[in-house]
Length: 129
Image (tube, rainbow, N blue to C red):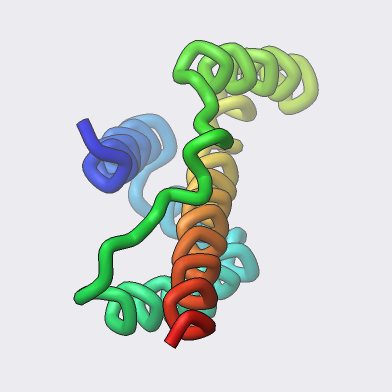
């Protein structure tokens, strides 16, 4: 399963759980509370689209191949944060209320890594010409 499908699937699952546990109004309020992070996604997404468009006819090199983190270490990292959130935010409800923040931060990290890779490819291609 590729990363894009995984993010979409996780988003749908997370929103479904939020609506079931918190209700629609509280879910919308929680998403609005993260507006700064969501706004931060806009320039990252624009840069991603720009590089994707500029480099669509070129063979790209993966400069991030040594930065791949295993799913096992990602799950362990997530579980540690879940335990800390469970203790810090008064139980299960407080713990799952942090999921939207984690999802947005994961998306920001993914876009940053992709943009860095595209930028390095862009630089390599256009400096060679």
